[in-house]
Length: 371
Figure 1 (cartoon, helix red, strand yellow):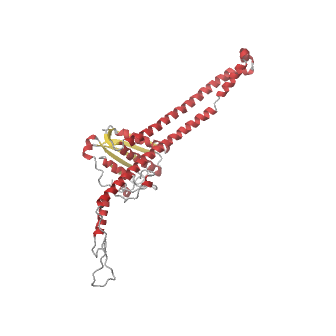
Figure 2 (cartoon, one colour):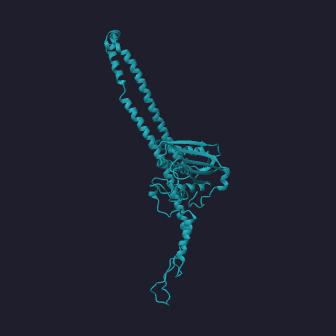
Figure 3 (cartoon, rainbow, N blue to C red):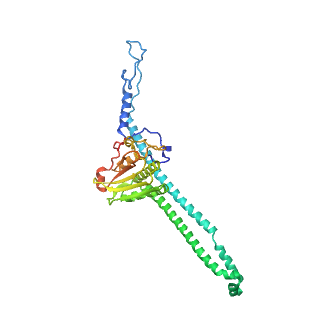
């Protein structure tokens, strides 16, 4: 359940689950392995030559010394992986922006095609023909309208033509309104993306509902295309103090994962429930619940591990990056599912001003997985 459609193409291969204590212990074991030169140690020392002459000391061999800068290298790789995960998150948001713009452009193209067709099929040219008849008989217009067969039907024809042209105008104006509205929607999507990119790294205090609504707008085209019903359950909660860009990355990824889960399971009604509730610990909880394929217990314990994914084309950056981002902001990200076919809930906790001073900066907690 990763994020970033193209981020993995640029990412250099890094050790999996690098952030957790498991990897730290693994590195320590490797160092110990390299440092051990006991002849009888089968885990890392020099092994005596079975063909050596008894009684003779085994021939000395050099063992690799432990790199003096190993801790610095581990720290560097951690920072590099953080950067790759963040870039993957930014790519996910950018991909969502492009998808939504593409959907709106499709609607714009449909409206433009309808307007073009209406104008080409317009009966406005018939009005010119009627006016030509009137000009030709302008000297005896009364007699033409009362005695001439064409003149007799001309008033009724003009009345019908006027009604038709009025209907035609209404239809064209409606499509032009749709065009204008869709163009405004494109401007909003691009402006929102630019705003988040510009303010990346800056902590702001704002209503959680604004963050959720922005994330929903970023996914709106995909939800409409796949027939997903959005259920909002927003409580009155305190404002949160967060980096909007990081939170948007997390929410966009959670909502997109939920859509994929429902596409895979195919319930009769695809329903995505987004809830906002207050926690008694100085935090606000934003939960994203789907009625999709669900998560097995064994996968639930690994769901936040770096590199773990159940998607065929996934890379396992998204949820691990989201968990790290949440903890760096002083919050948390957890998952719950009753099992296969039972859907899943992901809960993002974010600090209010009251809870921020006690929790901010906990991004280095063990991220090896689990809920």
